[in-house]
Image 1 (spheres, rainbow, N blue to C red):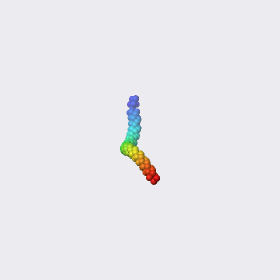
Image 2: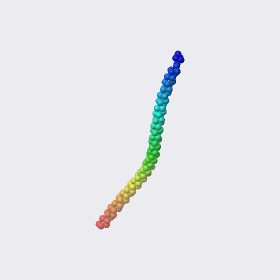
Image 3: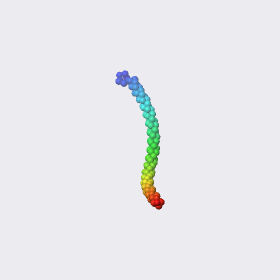
Image 4: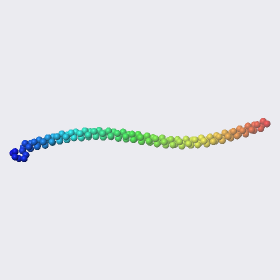
Length: 122
């Protein structure tokens, strides 16, 4: 039996080495699986946090859209008010001109009356 290239002892040593390698490989795989599980948990947590961020951004976008809409409405109202103010200013200017004409007419009439009174006294 010793003349065979592989004796039972040699085969046992070889088998022991294979089992040792398998055991080492198994431990490394368990460690790798543990790391993968941990990475998966971290990825899941990161995904939840990203989803929460996306939800917050969506809410902020909705609020911003409402604010922009309100701003547009306010600008439109301000535009209408500005047109009304311009129209009022134009009416006021016309009224001022009319008042100036009336005042000038009254002044002319008073001057004429005063002149008539002076002539009547003479």
